[in-house]
Length: 433
Image (cartoon, rainbow, N blue to C red):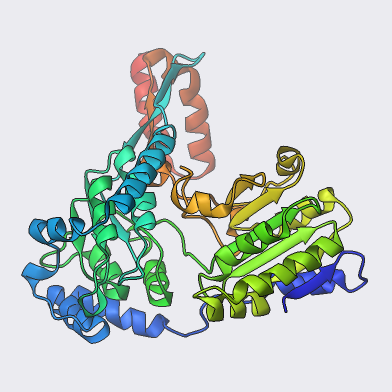
């Protein structure tokens, strides 16, 4: 059974705070092991990556076989059924169309002092995308990471995707092809992150690393941040559904299970002003669990981390949602836009009964790489901007320097930085001479 809470209960605040504080991330202490792996890759390059791939993925490689060859990619892609290819192409087209609108514009203007100011946007030169591997790997994640990078104009785009025991998902290779990926390496784990960040004899380093992974990948991304940029440290999946009693309890149950089936640490929460509806949804979850292939995982997630919360009204529901700051927020109410207007912290919002979160995972268009563990309070999902950087621009005319330079000199002197002030004063003296 999930956690059952009600805002009318005197113990609600304590119980809700405990729910928010539940530690669902990996408890395994992996940082020391990851530090050793990174040091090994930095010291030995290809040799370390090859040895670690043999050890962890049961796959023997050489420098020449670290990456898939064009012939291997073509052979695997040819295995993709026509229906799956068409679905992936539709997803790629929609994701590309959505992200194309995110590309920012350069700006330039001249202010009242005569100074020309502005900024310009340029892409990172190279990006590395991590894709969890094996037959359970996700081609949708390839599209969600690679397409924004290509829209941004990234010049070199590579993928690290482990193939444990040689298992390859042809859809992942097709997704990489559709997204314009340049090279696909069949390596994974902390050793792949280290190779992307520091480079090896075969793998050139990148500027930005994105993509989800296990605890070892997350720990490695933390450690290489600063050497390279990263997108975020992804935690277990989350969904919060705000629903009124006029909704279909079976649909809501399926939406909750769509995240619970990811892993046992995932969290699915229902907030409703109708206690009877909440009970009906919980009943449908139990019935639907019986038929799920991943029922053991989903059942554990629902029992350990799931919750049904009864509130007084939808305003209270929105307030609780903001405290949860969920990765995915579904609003299934008669006027979802009105509720959404009060929901300021969420990775992605899905409006109305015919917009299940699963659409967003594949073909909706917006990115499915989203902030977890309440980090939607201060961060956003992956976008084109993650693969670009803004450079400010300034040009002073003699008149502009005469107008604002003395203030700069004064502030430099107040901070005790004499050369700063002198660099301005030397020019002012020339202008005033």
